[in-house]
Image (tube, rainbow over all chains, first blue to last red; front, side, top):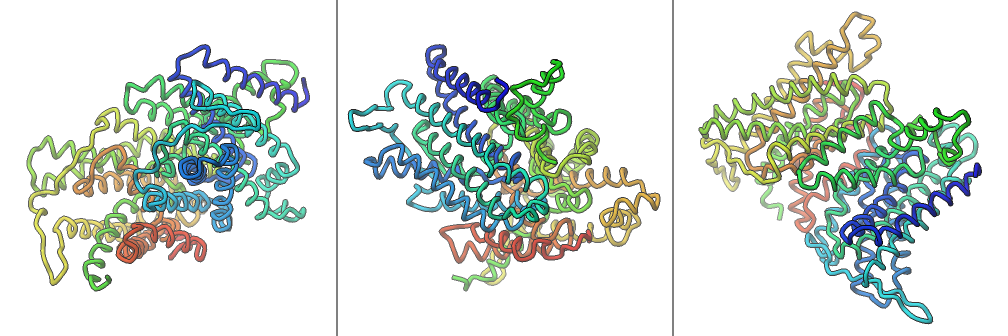
Length: 336
Length: 294
């Protein structure tokens, strides 16, 4: 129980079990919302890899989720014979490819606000291109994206029926979370952390800093593209707004609200954000106000975010260090 | 296609001065506190809403009430700046840069929330004052008087800031702090007071810009995001808080935007981002960036 791998596997299994039980407990509207929360959690988890592990503040993640969403939408609409899992893989590749293309330029300036502004500018570029290209449906986007059918040698499963697509979303989300966790714990993840803590020292130790940063950017881009692809058949529409910079700020919100530096932090943030939005849905502006105030409180007073602070309180409450806190890749607060 | 270059030039000037109006306060705060203030767009929007509400109350469509409403909007957002400085900016000194950026983004969310709660989600539209609704035609160029007014306002704000920073004791104090706050403190300058003054002035400039540019915009909570990317570009291209650099960058990016839209009508605005990325890569300190303010 004190080893990090079983602790992570148990947490993941508990979350998946809870998510899969949801259709039996709540109505379909909330199940749809839970699917979106799961996708948002992937967005946040991949941003957390970038921010808390590799130390890169990207304000342009929407470009990658939009790339994945459009790739999946085009494949489902134009080439329905492509198996859906292959389409998901292609969307992840689209996100990673775009991340490499943008990263080759943007990663030349990682210091200060440059990287944030460069990634913001490039994602706005993607936004304009999506809104003006007829292949991508211009301002209207692509509509009527069907929920796919999974085919195997023996039979096929129509995901349009009932909550089946939601189940697929949860399973792919869990697999992606596991992959991101594995990256965070791997040699590669340790190299990312070394670079975040002191890029110059990492370079002296023989770490190819720019190459590793590009890898972090590409991995996060792939996971973000996958999240975008999962969302396309769920909402059945993709539009250029997916690449608007407001979308890029969502993973940042989830991560900081939930707790940067704690692996599951962004997932908690995504749930809290959805709860605030749902609770204030009849009062325009209240969700912005509450999320803004929460975020300010996190930055000014509770730097560990919700989960980071909870873990710290739990640790303080017990005589011995809490075993569940072990997977945390960095001290609360994230940045050095 | 470029035969129409005088009109393109006029459009570039209009775009540039409107953007400079928004970017002026952003540049000021960035130059002195080294905070890239995401909430600037939100404050700009609040200024626009306040000015819009005031002109609707006054009921007259005159230039004087338009200007008065803009000045009152600047006053209101200046007071907001005072509160924000006390409640937020003061506490950010010890916070890592990435988190500072996020904190100002949180403030933007708060501004959006306030706008939605007070004014709702409806889209309002404000007309320019009656005396600015006419146009002057010079050759092939059609010059709306409101655009001329915006150009004049941008120039006035630029000259005013140049005068303040270079010709007054307060301005020299601000420049001393921008260059080296530690040394300025040693010399007995009240650095905290100047920081507060900068934030108040920066926020007031955002509100003023909101009031002056409210006509010809559709006034909705989306307004916060529309100018802020352009203003970011201007601050970055101009060079880290240089007012003169921001002014030049506004003109340059205005030219890029205006001529770019004529050359690539299918992708309006795209060359702006290309130019921004190019400048950041080739000259990351910006056009006039040297760490100095003026």
